[in-house]
Amino acid sequence: SPEAGGSLTASLEEVVAKLTRAKVGKAYGGAREALLLSSSFVLGQLDAMSGGNGAKAADYKATPFSTALAAE
Image 1 (cartoon, rainbow, N blue to C red):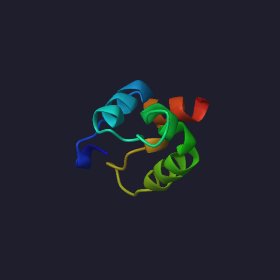
Image 2 (tube, rainbow, N blue to C red):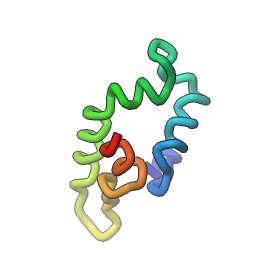
Image 3 (tube, helix red, strand yellow):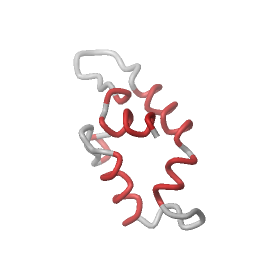
């Protein structure tokens, strides 16, 4: 989310790199593994966030990250 310092154009690899730098997924094989194991939840959250109203509502489901994660 841009409001939280994110980018709607971020790729899956960019998100994995940010999670790695934040040391997310230490209990897993790494950040990518943790993200893939949580992909259903993450995609569900992006779907819910995409339901906003107004002209400025972001379509999080159509982001490069979301489409790449769904393809994994």
